Image (cartoon, rainbow over all chains, first blue to last red; front, side):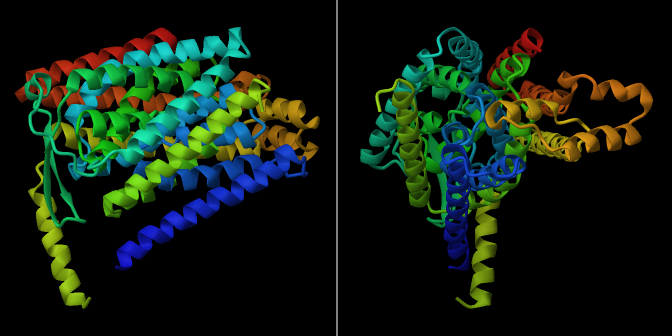
Length: 323
Length: 155
């Protein structure tokens, strides 16, 4: 019980921390309250610390929260925010993946297979993302609106779907059998080892290519999209999906980060506090994922998804002067 | 729940956790991810401290501050960046203080640690699979090739 209390306490603290930082940042950005210059990097540290606690639980790198929040409430260029978001997602994934790999929660086999298509697509996405911002200043707002719509769609699918915690896979497809995409992990909530297998691999690989493209384009790890593909398409348990998603992020964000680095889109003032906060936060987040009940994982994921969808739609429509 | 029952439960959980067999490639991947994340973050934090204290001049942020708030950081910070920086760093390296692009080096090297680390991980994973699983070995090689392409093409 003490462990469970700790889980909920940590979730509450991180949400409160995020809320306070966002409120103060909004005071400075929107109401021109004279905040000290040092506030921005320091607040970025606390913001990403809080994101780092929640992100691994939801199987997202953190970019999906970081990019909409920082671009909305902080006075930084979107290109720098996306560059920082990508590196941050990568660090989060690198920090939390070892624990998942050792406990069998993350499947290296599924992660590598997904990375074969997602990594290449993320390079293309990063190139086009930078080009769009340079060539069409208005174009990015249409993309943001579309991204928000997509997030909202996935949110609805996840909300109405049943048996997402432990999906039942009757038969593996030929590709899954060929690469032996099976695994097992200990589930404390059930008090037993859960064995799983996956299916519909060709469809999932197609989806991972799209996810990789979006990841590179928007500077996100795109864990929010990896999780439904793994869970709803392939039929992996929700905890395996969130954990394997982190592994995929670690592998696929590296090529995209190279593109941003080469374009000079990674600014130390934004990137370093964000990465440092994420580093410490995600260590707690990895512990939280192992301890948290699958239902809690699902609710946190849904809440993050809805929040990001609203932020993206607002930003897109606001940029197009429609609201 | 009494402490004895709790301890027994924890032991049972540990036993069940041990039942889960993790392959060598996953263990290698976990270990190298740990090493590179710590190495990268230590470098970045040292960089941030140098950056904030002004040893690495905050010239890029100055431009941003000026753009958004219409003011530069205080004269104190500018002096700190010059005075402390030039006392710590040998004269042959004073070019750091004259060229704004070099303040980005901290971030670049930090990110490169992560990038090179992921490549090293993929090499380790591919080597582990090479012994007993040719299919996964090829998959690991493909991911490695794509990552290497991005590094060589863009950096």
